[in-house]
Length: 215
Image (tube, rainbow, N blue to C red; front, side, top):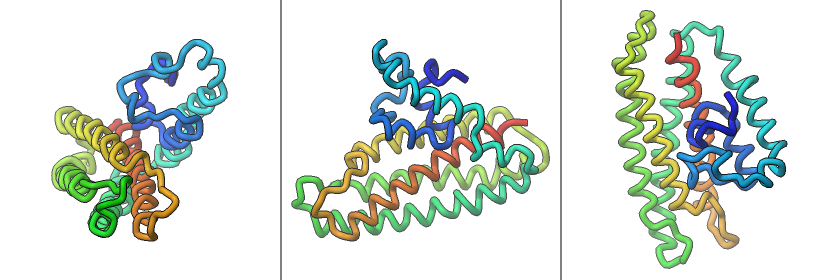
């Protein structure tokens, strides 16, 4: 995989840790999801960002977050995914919704208040919980039996793309998690929680797409 020639969406959904590298180089993946690095970087920038591109390519070839699961039986991997992502996402979103409501109520007149955030998070929670229930009730039991149905797996992978699009809209609403200087503790805690959710769901998606769904 040459990261230059694949879309930013494919980079962040297949390479755990890539978002951190992109952010550290001021590359906003969310506003360029359907573009490649070759498309968003001019010729001079390709040389300027050579270190970043090398890091991404190295991470693609040797990704510890994925490699450590390569030899684990898929039944065990499913248990890990449910315990470390499905249950965690439900809890993260419930907490985030409550914090968002608190922030929107207390700071509705602040120019940087993310009005509509709780509603946005409720939509994400509904879609993600529905997706995870389908996996837990239908797809995961089939995979545990050694059955890898192309149709349901394709649908789940399409859902993953939808989750990333929803994440993009969420990050736009919260101004890419920029915390203003007079933010209260609830606001700071909310954005910290959303940052962790972003990292977790991207790792979750990469693990399913690249390890669990392969056979």
